[in-house]
Length: 414
Image 1 (tube, helix red, strand yellow):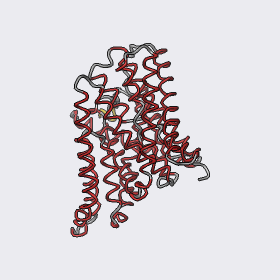
Image 2: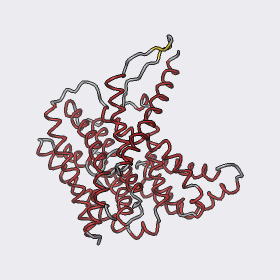
Image 3: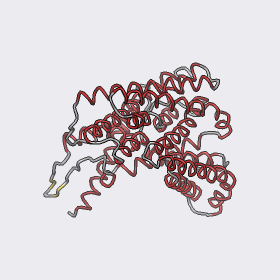
Image 4: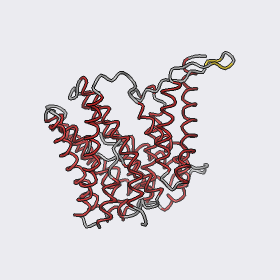
Protein backbone atom coordinates (compact mmCIF):
# COMPACT_ATOMS: atom_id res chain seq x y z
CA UNK A 1 0.00 0.00 0.00
CA UNK A 2 1.69 3.24 -1.13
CA UNK A 3 1.94 6.32 1.08
CA UNK A 4 -0.55 8.36 -0.95
CA UNK A 5 -3.19 5.67 -0.60
CA UNK A 6 -2.64 5.61 3.17
CA UNK A 7 -3.07 9.38 3.35
CA UNK A 8 -6.29 9.21 1.31
CA UNK A 9 -7.62 6.49 3.60
CA UNK A 10 -6.79 8.59 6.66
CA UNK A 11 -8.55 11.64 5.24
CA UNK A 12 -11.67 9.68 4.35
CA UNK A 13 -11.78 7.99 7.75
CA UNK A 14 -11.38 11.24 9.69
CA UNK A 15 -13.99 13.03 7.59
CA UNK A 16 -16.47 10.20 8.04
CA UNK A 17 -15.92 10.20 11.81
CA UNK A 18 -16.19 13.99 11.91
CA UNK A 19 -19.56 14.00 10.16
CA UNK A 20 -20.92 11.13 12.27
CA UNK A 21 -19.80 12.73 15.55
CA UNK A 22 -21.09 16.14 14.43
CA UNK A 23 -24.55 14.87 13.57
CA UNK A 24 -25.00 12.64 16.62
CA UNK A 25 -23.78 15.13 19.22
CA UNK A 26 -25.33 18.07 17.37
CA UNK A 27 -28.68 16.26 17.49
CA UNK A 28 -28.30 15.61 21.22
CA UNK A 29 -27.73 19.31 21.83
CA UNK A 30 -30.69 20.16 19.62
CA UNK A 31 -32.88 17.82 21.69
CA UNK A 32 -31.97 19.70 24.88
CA UNK A 33 -32.79 22.97 23.11
CA UNK A 34 -29.19 24.14 22.69
CA UNK A 35 -27.62 25.36 19.42
CA UNK A 36 -26.47 22.42 17.31
CA UNK A 37 -23.24 24.27 16.57
CA UNK A 38 -22.18 23.81 20.19
CA UNK A 39 -22.65 20.06 19.81
CA UNK A 40 -20.55 20.07 16.65
CA UNK A 41 -17.72 21.85 18.48
CA UNK A 42 -17.94 19.37 21.38
CA UNK A 43 -17.89 16.58 18.78
CA UNK A 44 -14.57 17.93 17.52
CA UNK A 45 -13.13 18.05 21.03
CA UNK A 46 -14.15 14.43 21.67
CA UNK A 47 -12.92 13.22 18.29
CA UNK A 48 -9.61 15.05 18.68
CA UNK A 49 -9.10 13.50 22.11
CA UNK A 50 -9.83 10.01 20.79
CA UNK A 51 -7.39 10.31 17.90
CA UNK A 52 -4.61 12.02 19.84
CA UNK A 53 -4.68 10.00 23.04
CA UNK A 54 -5.87 6.59 21.86
CA UNK A 55 -4.99 6.03 18.22
CA UNK A 56 -2.49 8.65 17.00
CA UNK A 57 0.51 7.03 15.40
CA UNK A 58 -0.74 3.49 16.05
CA UNK A 59 -0.74 0.84 13.34
CA UNK A 60 -3.66 -1.51 12.81
CA UNK A 61 -3.82 -4.57 10.57
CA UNK A 62 -6.86 -6.26 9.06
CA UNK A 63 -5.93 -9.56 7.35
CA UNK A 64 -2.40 -8.24 6.98
CA UNK A 65 -3.63 -4.91 5.57
CA UNK A 66 -2.07 -1.93 7.35
CA UNK A 67 -4.51 0.76 8.53
CA UNK A 68 -2.45 3.45 10.28
CA UNK A 69 -4.23 6.29 12.10
CA UNK A 70 -2.41 9.59 11.46
CA UNK A 71 -0.96 12.03 13.93
CA UNK A 72 -3.00 15.22 13.94
CA UNK A 73 -0.92 18.23 12.98
CA UNK A 74 -3.05 21.37 12.95
CA UNK A 75 -0.11 23.70 12.44
CA UNK A 76 0.91 22.19 9.09
CA UNK A 77 -1.75 22.84 6.45
CA UNK A 78 -0.11 20.42 4.00
CA UNK A 79 -0.84 17.45 6.27
CA UNK A 80 -4.07 18.70 7.82
CA UNK A 81 -7.04 17.08 6.06
CA UNK A 82 -9.42 19.58 7.62
CA UNK A 83 -7.55 22.70 6.51
CA UNK A 84 -9.12 23.25 3.07
CA UNK A 85 -12.51 21.85 4.02
CA UNK A 86 -12.87 24.00 7.13
CA UNK A 87 -11.92 27.05 5.06
CA UNK A 88 -14.66 26.18 2.60
CA UNK A 89 -17.00 25.65 5.54
CA UNK A 90 -16.56 29.18 6.85
CA UNK A 91 -16.86 30.56 3.32
CA UNK A 92 -20.16 28.73 2.82
CA UNK A 93 -21.38 29.94 6.18
CA UNK A 94 -20.71 33.58 5.35
CA UNK A 95 -22.06 33.14 1.81
CA UNK A 96 -25.33 31.81 3.21
CA UNK A 97 -25.38 34.67 5.72
CA UNK A 98 -25.03 37.14 2.86
CA UNK A 99 -27.82 35.46 0.89
CA UNK A 100 -30.18 35.86 3.83
CA UNK A 101 -29.35 39.49 4.61
CA UNK A 102 -31.27 42.30 2.99
CA UNK A 103 -28.92 45.03 1.70
CA UNK A 104 -31.59 47.62 2.42
CA UNK A 105 -31.56 46.53 6.05
CA UNK A 106 -27.76 46.43 6.08
CA UNK A 107 -27.67 50.04 4.87
CA UNK A 108 -30.19 50.92 7.54
CA UNK A 109 -27.93 49.34 10.19
CA UNK A 110 -24.70 50.80 8.72
CA UNK A 111 -24.46 53.45 11.42
CA UNK A 112 -24.99 50.83 14.12
CA UNK A 113 -22.36 48.50 12.64
CA UNK A 114 -19.79 51.29 12.41
CA UNK A 115 -20.29 52.37 16.02
CA UNK A 116 -20.17 48.75 17.22
CA UNK A 117 -17.02 47.97 15.21
CA UNK A 118 -15.16 51.02 16.52
CA UNK A 119 -16.16 50.26 20.11
CA UNK A 120 -15.25 46.60 19.61
CA UNK A 121 -11.76 47.57 18.43
CA UNK A 122 -10.85 50.41 20.79
CA UNK A 123 -11.65 48.76 24.13
CA UNK A 124 -10.14 45.29 23.47
CA UNK A 125 -7.06 46.92 21.91
CA UNK A 126 -6.67 49.16 24.95
CA UNK A 127 -7.22 46.34 27.44
CA UNK A 128 -4.86 44.00 25.60
CA UNK A 129 -2.11 46.62 25.38
CA UNK A 130 -2.41 47.39 29.10
CA UNK A 131 -2.33 43.68 29.90
CA UNK A 132 0.83 43.24 27.83
CA UNK A 133 2.54 46.11 29.63
CA UNK A 134 1.41 44.65 32.96
CA UNK A 135 3.14 41.37 32.03
CA UNK A 136 6.35 43.31 31.33
CA UNK A 137 6.25 43.32 27.51
CA UNK A 138 7.50 46.09 25.23
CA UNK A 139 4.91 48.40 23.71
CA UNK A 140 4.91 46.81 20.23
CA UNK A 141 4.37 43.33 21.72
CA UNK A 142 1.64 44.66 23.97
CA UNK A 143 -0.13 46.25 20.99
CA UNK A 144 -0.03 42.90 19.18
CA UNK A 145 -1.78 41.28 22.15
CA UNK A 146 -4.40 44.02 21.88
CA UNK A 147 -4.80 43.33 18.17
CA UNK A 148 -5.37 39.64 18.85
CA UNK A 149 -8.45 40.69 20.81
CA UNK A 150 -9.91 43.08 18.21
CA UNK A 151 -11.23 40.99 15.31
CA UNK A 152 -14.46 39.03 15.59
CA UNK A 153 -14.95 35.60 13.99
CA UNK A 154 -18.54 35.83 12.86
CA UNK A 155 -18.93 32.19 11.81
CA UNK A 156 -20.10 30.79 15.15
CA UNK A 157 -22.33 33.80 15.78
CA UNK A 158 -23.90 33.64 12.31
CA UNK A 159 -24.63 29.92 12.64
CA UNK A 160 -26.20 30.38 16.08
CA UNK A 161 -28.29 33.33 14.91
CA UNK A 162 -29.47 31.19 11.98
CA UNK A 163 -30.43 28.37 14.34
CA UNK A 164 -32.43 30.84 16.44
CA UNK A 165 -33.91 32.43 13.27
CA UNK A 166 -32.81 35.93 14.31
CA UNK A 167 -30.03 36.49 11.78
CA UNK A 168 -32.08 39.15 9.99
CA UNK A 169 -32.92 41.01 13.21
CA UNK A 170 -31.45 44.45 13.87
CA UNK A 171 -28.91 42.94 16.26
CA UNK A 172 -28.00 40.13 13.85
CA UNK A 173 -27.49 42.46 10.90
CA UNK A 174 -25.46 44.86 13.04
CA UNK A 175 -23.19 42.04 14.24
CA UNK A 176 -22.44 40.84 10.70
CA UNK A 177 -21.69 44.34 9.45
CA UNK A 178 -19.54 45.20 12.48
CA UNK A 179 -17.56 41.95 12.18
CA UNK A 180 -16.61 42.83 8.60
CA UNK A 181 -15.56 46.35 9.62
CA UNK A 182 -13.46 45.35 12.63
CA UNK A 183 -11.81 42.60 10.56
CA UNK A 184 -10.60 45.28 8.16
CA UNK A 185 -9.56 47.61 11.00
CA UNK A 186 -7.60 44.80 12.66
CA UNK A 187 -5.66 43.99 9.49
CA UNK A 188 -4.78 47.63 8.86
CA UNK A 189 -3.63 48.08 12.47
CA UNK A 190 -1.55 44.91 12.19
CA UNK A 191 0.33 46.40 9.24
CA UNK A 192 1.15 49.49 11.31
CA UNK A 193 3.11 47.52 13.91
CA UNK A 194 4.97 45.18 11.56
CA UNK A 195 8.32 46.91 11.27
CA UNK A 196 9.72 50.18 9.92
CA UNK A 197 7.73 50.08 6.69
CA UNK A 198 4.43 49.33 8.40
CA UNK A 199 2.90 52.73 7.60
CA UNK A 200 3.54 52.17 3.89
CA UNK A 201 2.12 48.68 4.20
CA UNK A 202 -0.97 50.03 5.92
CA UNK A 203 -1.54 52.56 3.13
CA UNK A 204 -1.14 49.84 0.53
CA UNK A 205 -3.60 47.55 2.33
CA UNK A 206 -6.03 50.42 2.70
CA UNK A 207 -5.90 51.07 -1.03
CA UNK A 208 -6.48 47.38 -1.75
CA UNK A 209 -9.49 47.32 0.53
CA UNK A 210 -11.01 50.39 -1.12
CA UNK A 211 -10.41 48.93 -4.58
CA UNK A 212 -11.92 45.60 -3.55
CA UNK A 213 -15.13 47.14 -2.28
CA UNK A 214 -15.42 49.56 -5.20
CA UNK A 215 -15.03 46.82 -7.78
CA UNK A 216 -16.72 43.84 -6.17
CA UNK A 217 -19.53 45.50 -4.25
CA UNK A 218 -20.55 48.59 -6.20
CA UNK A 219 -19.84 47.29 -9.70
CA UNK A 220 -20.95 43.82 -8.69
CA UNK A 221 -24.42 45.10 -7.89
CA UNK A 222 -24.61 46.55 -11.40
CA UNK A 223 -23.36 43.60 -13.44
CA UNK A 224 -24.32 40.59 -11.32
CA UNK A 225 -27.69 40.20 -13.07
CA UNK A 226 -26.00 39.82 -16.44
CA UNK A 227 -23.61 37.20 -15.07
CA UNK A 228 -26.40 35.26 -13.40
CA UNK A 229 -28.38 35.32 -16.65
CA UNK A 230 -25.89 32.73 -17.89
CA UNK A 231 -27.41 30.29 -15.42
CA UNK A 232 -30.76 30.69 -17.14
CA UNK A 233 -29.31 30.33 -20.64
CA UNK A 234 -27.19 27.26 -19.92
CA UNK A 235 -29.67 24.42 -20.02
CA UNK A 236 -27.82 22.07 -17.72
CA UNK A 237 -28.84 20.77 -14.28
CA UNK A 238 -28.01 23.28 -11.51
CA UNK A 239 -26.16 25.63 -13.89
CA UNK A 240 -27.38 28.67 -11.95
CA UNK A 241 -26.05 27.10 -8.73
CA UNK A 242 -22.68 26.43 -10.35
CA UNK A 243 -22.30 30.03 -11.50
CA UNK A 244 -23.27 31.32 -8.06
CA UNK A 245 -20.70 29.07 -6.37
CA UNK A 246 -18.10 30.22 -8.89
CA UNK A 247 -18.84 33.82 -7.91
CA UNK A 248 -18.44 32.85 -4.24
CA UNK A 249 -14.99 31.35 -4.92
CA UNK A 250 -13.87 34.23 -7.16
CA UNK A 251 -14.88 36.85 -4.59
CA UNK A 252 -13.12 34.92 -1.82
CA UNK A 253 -10.00 34.53 -3.96
CA UNK A 254 -9.75 38.23 -4.73
CA UNK A 255 -10.48 39.11 -1.10
CA UNK A 256 -7.46 37.00 -0.10
CA UNK A 257 -5.40 38.53 -2.90
CA UNK A 258 -6.43 42.02 -1.75
CA UNK A 259 -4.92 41.32 1.65
CA UNK A 260 -8.25 41.01 3.45
CA UNK A 261 -10.06 37.98 4.82
CA UNK A 262 -11.67 35.63 2.30
CA UNK A 263 -14.81 35.51 4.43
CA UNK A 264 -15.41 39.16 3.56
CA UNK A 265 -15.43 38.21 -0.12
CA UNK A 266 -17.82 35.33 0.59
CA UNK A 267 -20.16 37.58 2.55
CA UNK A 268 -20.13 40.28 -0.14
CA UNK A 269 -20.82 37.63 -2.83
CA UNK A 270 -23.80 36.40 -0.84
CA UNK A 271 -25.09 39.94 -0.36
CA UNK A 272 -24.94 40.69 -4.06
CA UNK A 273 -26.46 37.42 -5.27
CA UNK A 274 -29.10 37.62 -2.55
CA UNK A 275 -30.50 40.78 -4.12
CA UNK A 276 -31.24 38.95 -7.37
CA UNK A 277 -34.74 37.52 -7.52
CA UNK A 278 -33.32 34.23 -8.84
CA UNK A 279 -31.32 33.69 -5.64
CA UNK A 280 -34.30 31.95 -4.02
CA UNK A 281 -33.76 29.13 -6.51
CA UNK A 282 -30.36 28.26 -5.06
CA UNK A 283 -30.71 28.98 -1.34
CA UNK A 284 -31.81 25.47 -0.44
CA UNK A 285 -29.16 23.89 -2.68
CA UNK A 286 -26.42 26.01 -1.12
CA UNK A 287 -27.65 25.15 2.38
CA UNK A 288 -27.73 21.47 1.47
CA UNK A 289 -24.10 21.55 0.36
CA UNK A 290 -22.97 23.78 3.22
CA UNK A 291 -24.86 22.26 6.14
CA UNK A 292 -24.60 18.75 4.77
CA UNK A 293 -20.81 18.70 4.62
CA UNK A 294 -18.57 21.77 4.77
CA UNK A 295 -20.05 23.70 7.70
CA UNK A 296 -20.13 20.74 10.14
CA UNK A 297 -16.51 19.99 9.19
CA UNK A 298 -15.57 23.57 10.07
CA UNK A 299 -17.09 23.40 13.54
CA UNK A 300 -15.64 19.95 14.23
CA UNK A 301 -12.24 21.38 13.29
CA UNK A 302 -12.79 24.18 15.82
CA UNK A 303 -13.20 21.58 18.53
CA UNK A 304 -10.33 19.42 17.32
CA UNK A 305 -7.99 22.41 17.33
CA UNK A 306 -7.97 22.09 21.13
CA UNK A 307 -5.48 19.29 20.61
CA UNK A 308 -3.10 21.21 18.30
CA UNK A 309 0.51 21.65 19.26
CA UNK A 310 0.93 18.33 21.05
CA UNK A 311 4.71 18.73 21.08
CA UNK A 312 6.86 19.68 24.06
CA UNK A 313 5.74 22.78 25.93
CA UNK A 314 8.79 24.58 27.27
CA UNK A 315 7.04 27.48 28.98
CA UNK A 316 5.65 27.32 32.51
CA UNK A 317 2.16 25.88 32.87
CA UNK A 318 1.39 28.45 35.57
CA UNK A 319 2.43 31.27 33.21
CA UNK A 320 0.14 29.87 30.50
CA UNK A 321 -2.80 29.60 32.92
CA UNK A 322 -2.36 33.14 34.25
CA UNK A 323 -1.85 34.73 30.83
CA UNK A 324 -4.73 32.76 29.31
CA UNK A 325 -7.10 33.66 32.14
CA UNK A 326 -6.33 37.36 31.84
CA UNK A 327 -6.48 37.46 28.03
CA UNK A 328 -9.72 35.46 27.83
CA UNK A 329 -11.35 37.54 30.56
CA UNK A 330 -10.51 40.92 29.05
CA UNK A 331 -11.26 39.55 25.58
CA UNK A 332 -14.82 38.69 26.57
CA UNK A 333 -15.36 41.77 28.73
CA UNK A 334 -13.82 44.13 26.15
CA UNK A 335 -16.13 42.98 23.35
CA UNK A 336 -19.30 42.99 25.43
CA UNK A 337 -18.64 46.44 26.88
CA UNK A 338 -16.97 48.04 23.84
CA UNK A 339 -19.49 46.79 21.28
CA UNK A 340 -22.34 47.32 23.73
CA UNK A 341 -21.39 50.96 24.23
CA UNK A 342 -21.07 51.43 20.47
CA UNK A 343 -24.50 49.89 19.91
CA UNK A 344 -26.04 52.06 22.61
CA UNK A 345 -24.49 55.23 21.17
CA UNK A 346 -25.93 54.31 17.76
CA UNK A 347 -29.44 54.30 19.22
CA UNK A 348 -30.04 50.62 19.94
CA UNK A 349 -31.89 49.48 23.07
CA UNK A 350 -30.14 48.08 26.14
CA UNK A 351 -31.26 44.55 25.23
CA UNK A 352 -30.08 44.88 21.62
CA UNK A 353 -26.77 46.37 22.81
CA UNK A 354 -26.20 43.35 25.03
CA UNK A 355 -27.10 40.98 22.18
CA UNK A 356 -24.63 42.72 19.89
CA UNK A 357 -21.87 42.70 22.51
CA UNK A 358 -22.33 38.98 23.16
CA UNK A 359 -22.46 38.20 19.44
CA UNK A 360 -19.11 39.90 18.88
CA UNK A 361 -17.23 37.77 21.43
CA UNK A 362 -15.81 34.92 19.26
CA UNK A 363 -12.22 35.06 17.99
CA UNK A 364 -10.87 32.64 15.42
CA UNK A 365 -9.11 33.15 12.10
CA UNK A 366 -7.67 36.66 12.39
CA UNK A 367 -6.55 36.18 15.99
CA UNK A 368 -4.47 33.18 14.92
CA UNK A 369 -3.23 35.01 11.83
CA UNK A 370 -2.05 37.96 13.95
CA UNK A 371 -0.19 35.84 16.51
CA UNK A 372 1.50 33.65 13.88
CA UNK A 373 2.49 36.74 11.86
CA UNK A 374 4.02 38.28 14.98
CA UNK A 375 5.97 35.09 15.63
CA UNK A 376 7.17 34.80 12.03
CA UNK A 377 8.32 38.45 12.10
CA UNK A 378 10.29 37.78 15.30
CA UNK A 379 8.15 40.05 17.50
CA UNK A 380 7.38 37.11 19.79
CA UNK A 381 10.32 34.75 20.34
CA UNK A 382 11.35 31.61 22.20
CA UNK A 383 9.22 30.46 25.13
CA UNK A 384 6.88 33.45 25.07
CA UNK A 385 6.06 32.78 21.41
CA UNK A 386 4.84 29.32 22.40
CA UNK A 387 3.02 30.73 25.41
CA UNK A 388 1.11 33.39 23.46
CA UNK A 389 0.28 30.90 20.70
CA UNK A 390 -1.24 28.45 23.20
CA UNK A 391 -3.08 31.34 24.87
CA UNK A 392 -4.53 32.47 21.54
CA UNK A 393 -5.69 28.94 20.71
CA UNK A 394 -7.40 28.73 24.10
CA UNK A 395 -8.95 32.17 23.50
CA UNK A 396 -10.47 31.02 20.22
CA UNK A 397 -11.79 27.80 21.74
CA UNK A 398 -13.29 29.34 24.89
CA UNK A 399 -14.92 32.29 23.11
CA UNK A 400 -16.25 30.00 20.39
CA UNK A 401 -17.78 27.57 22.87
CA UNK A 402 -19.38 30.09 25.25
CA UNK A 403 -20.83 32.40 22.60
CA UNK A 404 -23.72 30.16 21.41
CA UNK A 405 -24.86 29.73 25.01
CA UNK A 406 -24.70 33.47 25.76
CA UNK A 407 -26.44 34.34 22.48
CA UNK A 408 -29.26 31.92 23.24
CA UNK A 409 -29.74 33.51 26.67
CA UNK A 410 -29.60 37.08 25.36
CA UNK A 411 -32.16 36.35 22.60
CA UNK A 412 -34.48 34.38 24.88
CA UNK A 413 -38.16 35.30 24.36
CA UNK A 414 -37.34 37.38 21.25
